[in-house]
Image (cartoon, rainbow, N blue to C red; front, side, top):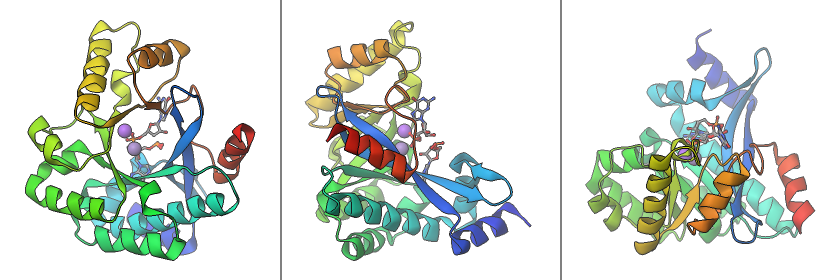
Length: 254
Ligand code: G
Ligand code: G
Ligand code: MN
Ligand code: NA
């Protein structure tokens, strides 16, 4: 069986899972959000990383039903935590470049929100800057329609793609996510520290919140706090974990 055929079966047989990684408010240390990260629990191979199957999903068109499943499952889970009385969280969902430009994303998001009852203003879509830059006029129209639904928009992997600040400025963006590649070598790399400082200052001056990814050490966190970065994700707080483990993290702080 090809990977594509196996992936098609995985979707039908319910072998896809969402893991969740905390998004932490740097000032208070509290978990204020979750990024949903897709996993494939294959009966033979075990857990398969999205790095292996998202490209296949994108080239085969399976990204549409898989992306829709992710949206619906993330909203369902977030609403369940809300109903259970846990503090409200932003739920961040990755949207692949192909899924972004496919066209029916607005309808799909609307459906995930209405069937779950999850409030739109707590849903955040993560879109890479390259996906936004590929067809900027189409992206602007789409981002405006998504923004009109009331949800939040984040630029994923910021600093690594081919975006122009002229576009970013016109897009209805809420959050810049600093790519983990700029965080990894702090505090050894003066260049990376300068880049992070610049992104934080520029993001704030344009009215965006800034989140740093891939934070693994207290020294990295101290640097980001000192520079006024708003939020972080990374192994320092937690790896992406299954829903029950994430819920335990939430209960431990409430
Ligand atoms: O979770 P890491 O855990 O290994 O994710 C690897 C890559 O897969 C990252 O680039 C991440 O953005 C991407 N990814 C994870 N989950 C999803 C998803 O639900 N949809 C899309 N399009 N990409 C995802
Ligand atoms: O492309 P995106 O930024 O959505 O993907 C996030 C990826 O980063 C996932 O594969 C996730 O598991 C991984 N990740 C999250 N936190 C850390 C971290 O602290 N260190 C490293 N090396 N990877 C991380
Ligand atoms: Mn992401
Ligand atoms: Na990222």
